[in-house]
Image (cartoon, rainbow, N blue to C red):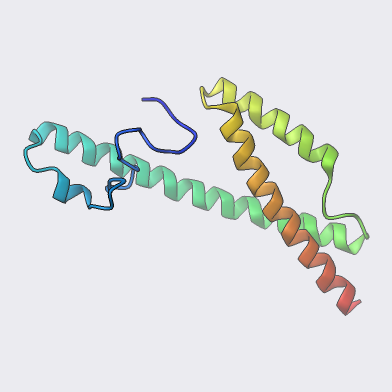
Length: 132
């Protein structure tokens, strides 16, 4: 199974039981061998579990970055740290390569997360400055 940067397997399956055309997985399985259908269900359940784990891991990550934001604000440090961000991007690209994941996709994902973290840090700094 290959991983593409879009998350689509290329056959219209978006991994959550639906097809790219919007139909539910069950409505598009008529005529499919029961063993194939069972394997699709098993794989999609795994995808659903992985998606849930990703969401929970991101929530934990953001709890930590919120603490970093409060620490930065309390000590008047800038919300962004380009040096740290560059180190993290390089590190994540290496991890992606080792995991056979497209490093460019991993970098795009981390850039998205970093932008959100910086936005949170800016808001925390603004809130700290208006109170203090």
